[in-house]
Length: 369
Image (cartoon, rainbow, N blue to C red; front, side, top):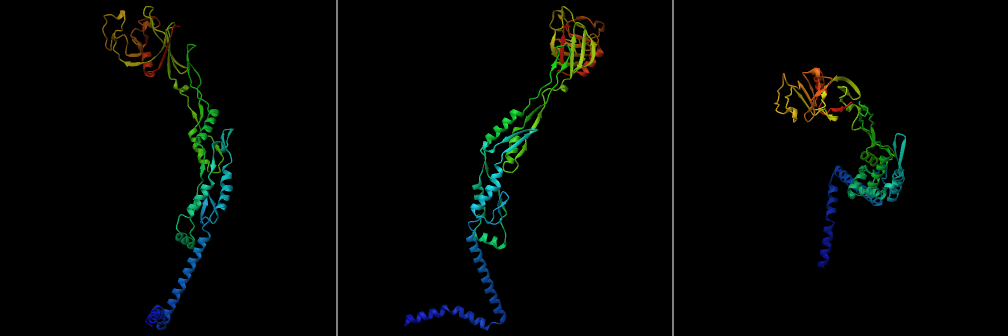
């Protein structure tokens, strides 16, 4: 009996909570009743919505979440096979079209299979599903309830052999490149003849490869080859002043490129101390030089002569080699003769003009005739 009594007592205690609620509502006013009923209604609606979206989540779990796209193609709500079909038609097929590169009127076709290009369809679809299931179930249910799609676009996934691509561009460069041609100076006729220079043309291979790589994931299948002009090392404008000396006529000709600027009378070396023939250049310019005795028998026991009267070099010196140079002379009567000790003498005015115009490095051509 005691056991039965205890069971009855426990049963009564189990119903004590609802009984109190019943008595509370019985004694409560109408406002309390409405609040209670409203709370119950809202709870029921909430549970119903949660149940609805939970079931929807379970039913659509195998599909891509709304708002997800692959290369701009909406695949939200699609199954894996449906998304794969969309990517194959909208991405893989267009990107397999060969690429055409143009240079002026010439075209070069890049068959994308030659560089081993493949579109990773599975990888893109997998990325879309990984994005869809990157949040927990409650977060996805909340997004569905609030109508907040993911707004994620999966980019193109490509594979290709860059070395093969670079080899293709190198082949184009071999066909397109034109080397530059430098101007050169010809004095075989005794006066300067400057040949025409020519600009070259070449493919900027690294930039062209980058341009192709940028276009591979897009539908752009026609590209210009990136090129640049190549300046020759030497152009006609690079030739400045040129000095030509003819010993037989005792004349110095000053050219600028092919243009004759002026002609000056000179004195050159005597038979005993001849002026050397050949190609030289101005190696030193000195104003008001000191004359130093050369290492020659005729200058034995001579002493240096400072600038001023009595200095055989005059006020201007243009050295073209060891102890040899072009210089002004106080004895202008010697011009037109072969009377020097090897140097080339000019008038003081001519020396000043040459000194002011030519620079170190100016070529000097000395001919016997």
